[in-house]
Image (cartoon, rainbow, N blue to C red; front, side):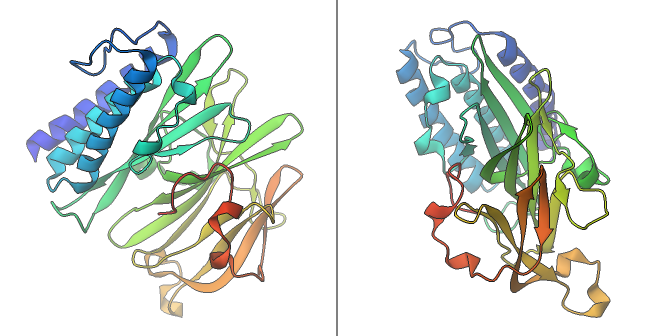
Length: 321
């Protein structure tokens, strides 16, 4: 346990410096693989293939390793390897298709950036149960003169009221993202992200968040665009919490241009507000984007679960958790 804690602290302390260096160091790293030891000198493409194979092996260990120590160690080296890969020339256009089982990779329609997210299971040394999940991520942004990388650091356990605050990449509400929706109002682009959070043994969460870039081009998570009720200040993000063994749908439907979500209810009046007991009731509400806001509407009369996957957001690259 003590050794696992030391590895975890090392992971937390070192990753910010790795990403910080990646934002400023734009030299050709194909011949100096500084993040992964013993990497052979290869062409940029061969280097990317090499890194992807390492990601696959480490990703398998993150998911299947029985001990927490092994999973933490694999997560540490997974992050190092991914950073090294994303520093390679041509990496922005490399799909990492073979590694997509272990890391979610989403690209908006304007192809201005990519966002990578993955999870680490915490709990007993078991392949089945988990006490909680911790999330990791990176944004790879392609500019005319340089490639920028931003690490994402999960702070969800320390946030009091995350629905009403904007967050930076260093103070992020962690989730495994599975859809991205690009919208624009006036001159501001919004990249809405739909994600999953395993949360605890008692409950899971689905999250609708939004990514924007500030005047300096830095990523910011959350914006007051989710209008839940009229005459009530809009939220920066929406968090749906429900019983852990339930399946709740939160999806963007491209042909309808809306975000559909299952309505959650408590099992009885005594459980109102105890969100770990909430269950979907089979009906759907939805958000529609108007005048720069995702406005909540009630009762979508369509069986969302039967809509084919290809009709979802073009950024969708892996099955919904």
